[in-house]
Image (cartoon, rainbow over all chains, first blue to last red; front, side, top):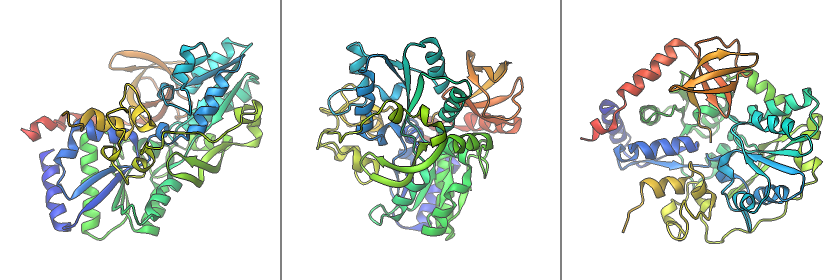
Length: 354
Length: 75
């Protein structure tokens, strides 16, 4: 560990300029804060958090649609726990549940299928949110529901994929990204090859990293070394779990059920080709279609800076709402709600108590 | 949200398996990995095994965990 830190210091001195490395995975954000490794890095090396938390980048209009669904009689909304506290325009799933709406927290998409089988007189809508790590599990649920001829199950789909979002960040000169720490568990599914275009097109080095503090430090060292040697390649620090081409079965299933579509990222806007939509073949499991969901423009607190926090332009400390009134107990923006959000991480680990 | 934990398969059923994470048992789906076997270490995300680890990969993680002690570095 000590050697890793010494190497980083040495290489940073050799490079001799300020560097910004972006991690695009909420789990990396939390691991970096929890372990305190940010304090071990030299001042010239900054870790910035990108849009790597699926809950945080989910557009509030999606939450409003989910809230509207859970109020309908005969509908049960099944969701991962992360989403229930995120505020929409005037409510949250948690608040709706407290006032009697049917919102169930499930551990996996297959639990939502079990729920649909157990409640044949209800329609179970699963909230499909997450990146490439999660999308195959939801694809599996849809595929299985089709195979078993299930009639009372559908997915409100807002799955997103990483490459187009990273492309947008890499292209933005205001971002000044010197290296990407690429998401480890997304890469378990996709393989390392999806990042190659970033090196080729923008000459930005990429390292796929594991989640132990040691992994992240080592990845920072690998990025520094690439910069010192004038290289921009995709390197794999997390080779114990990640291969070049990923999990074939998972990718095939995803491709069977989903197709790329344009998608709205909170605070960023529409990114072409960055979402996953349900293919026509599986249309009867598309909640937006079968339940005729209408997406309307959501209203959020205009002071909330989550949008620029997600692009790494502001830190949570730049936000006037941070700490008071926005805190994990009373979150206003999604980056404070999600345990992997940058604001929650700052609140927990970097807040200076006056 | 992309949290995934290493776990060991202690029982195999059809396309599901019982896994043990530090002694806590849970059923997960194993249809996304090829030929799951009893005793395999797998990476579990949202109720699904998404990757199977070789013995050498398990050993690598154990070595990293043993080597990782930030407190030691700071003091």
